[in-house]
Length: 248
Image (cartoon, rainbow, N blue to C red; front, side, top):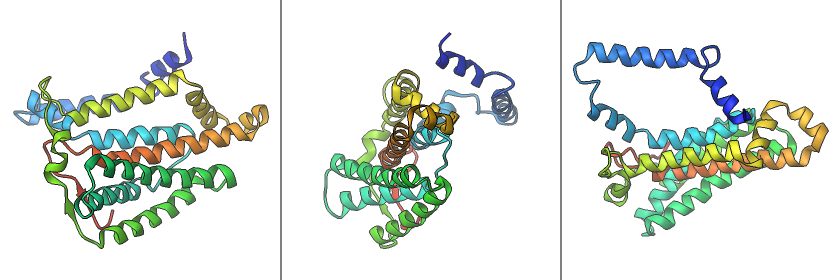
């Protein structure tokens, strides 16, 4: 049995994560009993099409949590990336693809700074990301001048429902991101290093030296920041246009 399969089975065992699964199932049953239309295809399609932004952010944060870190700046970095995307698209007239790439770079830069401070100087990630939270919050205010912008039809294609099951392209894309992350964590050397750093960083340093661990720490922080930058491009399908708030 491979390590990935063993970890998957353990994560869904009653003693490890079973309680959360039971709570989720209990809520579904309760809502189904007290409402008339909860158990319907429309309900579950609506829920699925509102998930992509959360799925993208959660996928990136998974790397941070597995490696034993924490990131308090996720909301503010998301707001900054969304603000950059909106300003470049609306005010500067850039195509959506180019603006999205810049937003991705902004999120990646924030993640790289976090990773460099945590990995190089061993500053607790709680303090580093708390500082980045304030930096990103202030930068968002400066970029937007405290104005709210709406992209509207510019991102409508991402929220359009596909012919299959009525799901949006954004939802399918978010599932692809989760699948790619699962492959990276379970089938690549980088994924094994992420687990190793979170499992026993001291033993890892003694056995292989601190440089590989620092590189892994920096890389998963960079990946998480880039994921934050990508999240504004995945709107809540059929729910609301992307907002570029003045404050996160």
